[in-house]
Length: 201
Ligand SMILES: Nc1ncnc2c1ncn2[C@@H]1O[C@H](COP(=O)(O)OP(=O)(O)OP(=O)(O)O)[C@@H](O)[C@H]1O
Image (cartoon, rainbow, N blue to C red; front, side, top):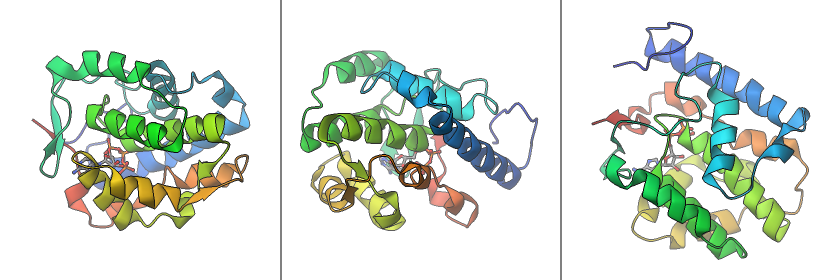
């Protein structure tokens, strides 16, 4: 089943390509316009602002908490009955150190508040916390996509792999927009990786 979208596209590949193109343009605009400074760092409100910004032209649900249960592979993200309490709790989590920030990021991934586009919005949200708190960000060019996805799958049980992977890719070049842009690259979607598709339950 294809997601309802503002372009009335009915072909999955076409939607994935349009979504990728527009979300990339919007991410660029988010930085170039300076609107990124309006994001409340480390809160769900901040994440929601980023998500609405990236996906508002494509989906009605942009920036809004999902109203269906979803899964990827063998993992079911936070069931609806726990979703809002989880988000309130995540807002209160500490974000002073690298480890604390990744722990917060992992919990936000487990919450997966939006119907689609969680990864892209949450990676920007993660970088903003890192930038503010430890004056470093992830150089996503140095993060292998397969290793990242494998570490994220594992992170719902144990976060050692994702901590090690992202730590090894930290950089001091915090004002280089290209680093953030790479974090929202999803071209593998239409390159045959069907296992990455989010399933509505
Ligand atoms: N099996 C899994 N278990 C837990 N987390 C997963 C699993 N598969 C993927 N993830 C996480 O979910 C994110 C994908 O979520 P979603 O599809 O909503 O985001 P996206 O922005 O559309 O895509 P992507 O993050 O892949 O670029 C991945 O980036 C990864 O962090």
